[in-house]
Length: 132
Image 1 (spheres, one colour):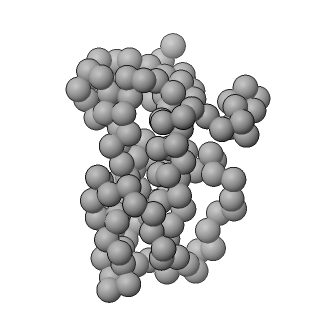
Image 2: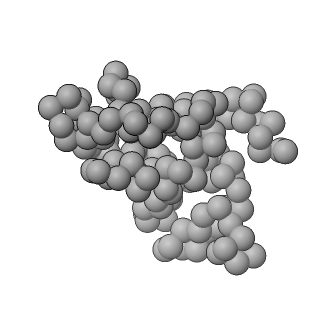
Image 3: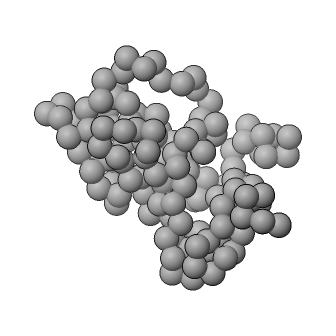
């Protein structure tokens, strides 16, 4: 199996995860948080730590299909760093829910879902997605 055939490959130890479910359910992978990219929500990353000690980043766009909601309207404002911003996306360790409707709101909700998956496993609706 090549790197291109996998959902993710650890850049350090070369451990490979064929599908997103393999990666998210691996106990050797710990979610560190969301790394927001100021001015470019399309570049947001979820950062994980692998048991080998390396960090493994996944573009948020590769996991957004896990949310049961439509794409955000492109007219939704971008608050990251603005006065209206609660600054949650400025710190990877900040896992708090944000009450602002901004371009990062979807990835903040996805962060909550990923934390839930790491703590309790996949919800039933995602088990169907994984097997289908």
